[in-house]
Length: 189
Image (cartoon, rainbow, N blue to C red; front, side):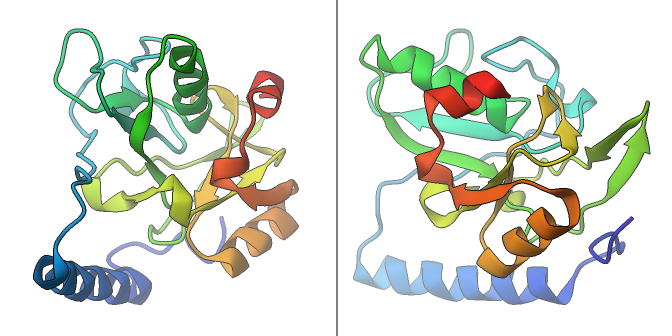
């Protein structure tokens, strides 16, 4: 267990929430982007890539709003049990002309996460509340770590570069921009 495994609301979460509220108020005055907000994934719902029930699995999850397309069988966003499924879906739908408006991933810089031993693997906790997500353009991800999520090796997102570097130092892997995740990298996961 690491230093981020503290229960309750962290000071960082309170500060980030306050900053988001102030930023949102300012954006409202300046004209808002038409970007839809992330939703909570805490209720039982299937992953739009693999069909697994999202809230029954550990690790980072994701959701994508597409510009002119919607997932089959439910209102947007498309929702995913893992960052791996998030990117696999994004790459698979590109060939059909789907263009993401925004993709959100769990932001481990703003949650009190745990890494625990489970069945011989190091597994990172899930965080599924709407406020636990950040847009990919604001995230770095740790790839190639020894930590697993719903689909095996996890791609772990952070909005804080130092926290991403600390995670990679502790659990292995490399830090890259979330927007730089490639098909080849996802295929290796």
